[in-house]
Image 1 (cartoon, one colour):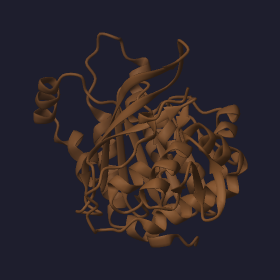
Image 2 (cartoon, one colour):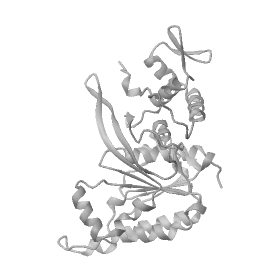
Image 3 (cartoon, rainbow, N blue to C red):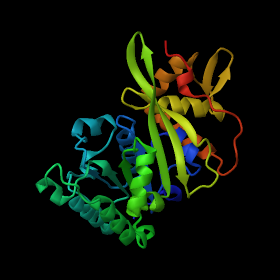
Length: 316
């Protein structure tokens, strides 16, 4: 089995890992990531796959949205040869694949993207006016119960993505009629709500946007910080360099001396833009700073001072 520090897989966002209070997603547990379309659910999952592969783990993704392709994997530095991809929209097949992958104990991370895209096998032959039974939630509930007693031994983290219902009143009435819809929320150790926030412009062009993130459940760390915060998406991916700079300054890993900023005795720039470009071009230095930042995370000690978020800096 692969060895992980504290049995945690980093999410790819330092800000989220800090907010969870444990440094990432825990192995041996379920995680639910909910949000509307284009809210960053798949992006966050792809970053988590890249982090799991850096730790030597094998990853799998059940892609019912048919949104994963080789060029996208290359963008997130994912080794496609170590990524098992299964594509199906039939709920029965998807959940059977999930069970087979989990019980194989070969994968450190399994992504299920997403539940909302599934249909049950008989739905293809039914009339569009036929009212179908909520069989998908029932199948999911059964699978989760079957894996519940073994998931701590599987050495696998399973992440589900789902769509947030628009109307809370409609959701309440559906839950009242079918309690199996509660199964994932009850079994998941961590639940996140993602919502697309403000769009960032440069010279009239969109360069990124913020993702408003809310931790609505966390049974791993009861001392998680900042249950509501923002993740900045820069050029279709998490602005990790900006997060490294923010936390590096916060923990005095990056220090200002005179009119410049230094890491120990190494000059990295006189302003934010120069620091950003310097660290972006020096990946080894970025990994070193990130490692020191993670070592500086003091859980569960409370940190009272606010963080310097990268989106507060202008990049012009």
